[in-house]
Image (tube, rainbow, N blue to C red; front, side, top):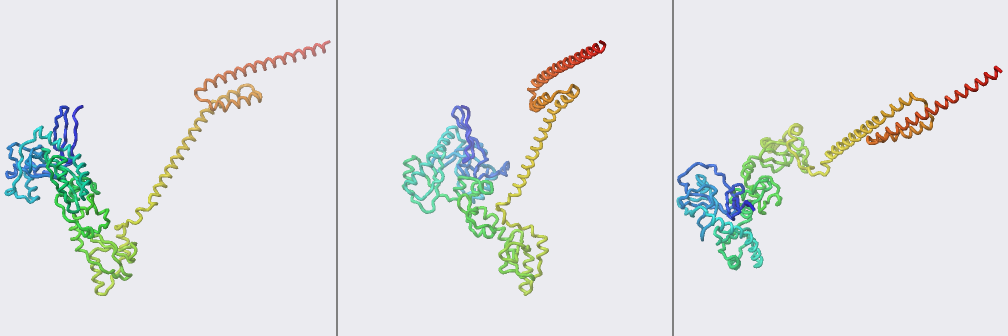
Amino acid sequence: MGTIKEYDCQRGCEKEIKETGEIKCTYKRGCCKLGVFNWLEGISQEEMKDLFEVRFKNTRKLIFRNTSEQNLKTGDIVVVEAQNGYDVGIITLAGAIIANQLKRDRIDPTTYEFRKIYRKARPADIQKWQEAIAREHRTMIRSRQMAADLQLNMKIGDVEFQGDGTKAIFYYIADERVDFRQLIKDFAEEFRIRIEMKQIGARQEAGLIGGLGVCGQALCCSRYMNNFQSITTQAARCQDLSLNPQKLAGQCGKLKCCINYEASVYVDAQSKLPKVSEPLHFEDGDAFLMKTDILKGMMWFSYDPKSMANMIQLTAEEVKEVIAMNRKGEKAPTCMQNNLAEKQSEFMSAVGEESISRFDSDKKKKKNRSSDRERRKEKGERNEKQERAEKLEKPERTEKAERAGKPERNGRQQRKEESQAPAAQQTTEGGNERQERKEKGERGERGERGDRNRRHHHGHRNNRDRREKKQEGGNEA
């Protein structure tokens, strides 16, 4: 049967099942959720030498202290202390980088009581761990059915078994408080294990499941985020984003976390722009604000409030100068002509991008190309036909030249040869032999006819000679 390899993306390990039934697991960091790059690898720190980060399923990971006095490193599968029994996980970080992790989680290593690492996992521990993992999917499906039977307004998103198989964590989502006391009793009776119910939000569920965002990268909540801040539509407004729920919402159904990333930059840049509450007064008319580029500090104005054609592009400083002149009761000189010549191409409107006829020119080009190909093809076929006709006409010309040196034939024979000429043109290489035989036969016939004509002509001469002799004899008498 050979060895079987399976990749467990939820725990970041590769499982290899050998022919003997032995299971070997190795750490693969490629698909680990909330993964951290150890940029301090190789740097030793005395305070952090016994602290290790151990990863479990999906985004759950904790810091443990090594009390086994064994030499541990990144990628080792270890047995760690749990609230009841023991658990199995994979070491993903070690060394000085642990200090940054503790600082991020606001943990004081001098006062915090870390759980212990018992030992490296034995083959029996890994076998039991994999058997518990194999039960997770079936347990999740059955638990959803039981929650639906009790008509509870909750959704069970994931189930995680402890390494020894004696306990399971049920992650659920609920919009309101749920009384699941009866559900826990049913779970304990059905699965014969200890039950822990853990409520999570929609963002945490997206992080557990994982996926790709509209940007093409892995979801932020599954890649590095573990603290979720509140997000409002005000952050979208200050960035001039379209308030379309379908575009602003992520895979969790909530507002995207990345909306907050640049909100502070836009707020700072917007504070440097002048507030335009009324149209600007120029010598040739009033200009209305149509468009603002916050990061570039550019503002576009138009003389027609309902049209975006022939817009004037002004910087924030120029707008401030115009506003100051208007407050003094003065009208600013027009800069329409210069602005159109220099800056019209910088702003592009999206109107017409979805036009039905935007690909017509390409179609015409394709049609012209196809017609050119057809013309070339027809021309090539004509040339081939002409070449074939010329090849077939050559033997006819040679035959005519031979016939010109021989005695004239009667009209019947000429009509016969003319009728045979088109047939000779249509013959192929395989019929050349038949044509040669016909030509030989015709030559033989022509030879026989020539002999008959010569005999006939000779006979006429003999008769004429006899008549002349008779006349001469009569004259002598």
